[in-house]
Length: 435
Image 1 (tube, helix red, strand yellow):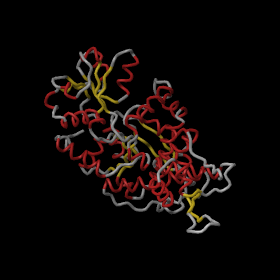
Image 2 (cartoon, rainbow, N blue to C red):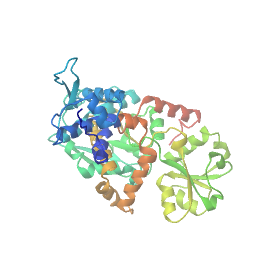
Image 3 (cartoon, rainbow, N blue to C red):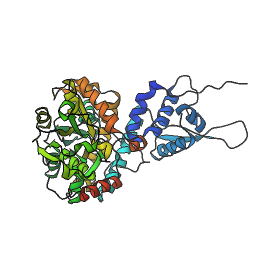
């Protein structure tokens, strides 16, 4: 009897898998990482791998490998060949990468950005001219920077914070610059202002809460959701336990309570949506805090506050016991979403394709090597870089990834979920309200 040696992915290969997964989904990323590492391994003579070798090397079952191989072939990331065999029977197929590591990563993000623009067109029901360089997924593609860089202004929904880390990581690592983009960031007070910056032309891309996106689309405002930065909203309701009087664990505990929020904000909209869905909107009192919910909660002006996931974390650092109810755990609402103008989208939007490819790279870097990007965020805040990295990791765990990200990659979204959000807002008489 003979011994057959098989090489398998392990924890040391996690970074490569994560970087590929941002543009492919987890299973296809594992297969592609295995093929790349196998080809470059000094002790493996044959660069091509059969389906059986891939199954053993990745730990995936046969169907998962078949689906992953189909996706990778459709995106021109791997090549198929027939393995010569001295035995009888039909010779098996085998695969190897079509490019080296750097070119493969560029191709992954290139094809993913095209797929995201196709999703955006479906959501916005928009007609789009093919962008120069936006070839079909099985065409070669080119991520080389054009001679003249395009300027892209991104309007953030708030001051820089951990949720924005992928954008800062992309700028810091040169992911935009390599794709011919000069990206700058502006800060705005809330999703409404970021959305208006896109509509009035002072920004090319806005980072906007999903509730504001739905209302804009329902009102036929000329915007297109390009990609979802985080798959679930980071909006939370939180209470300081000694002021609330008991552990805040259930929606039903909100009856008769005063809730701090900021009128017209994304968090206020989502809190009202959540309360209407749970038939509690008429049984609570909403108190306008004008953007100072946390301080007002400390002062005892109300029982509960609305905010982002980071707000209760900051209270906890002061030694307080804080209980949190995440709206995204109870209702399927997308999180922060990158939007652009419909007019530019219909013209083709090649800079957007490059922007999305660069942002996918930034997402991967924020997941695998956040130190430098976190330092860039920290430089514009009063937080240390380590806290930014830690909060982003917690955000990803809580809000950043769902099954669709594991299957398709970062930014994925679709009409069905947007439609459900619109129906819920309409049911709660929240759709047509002025922001």
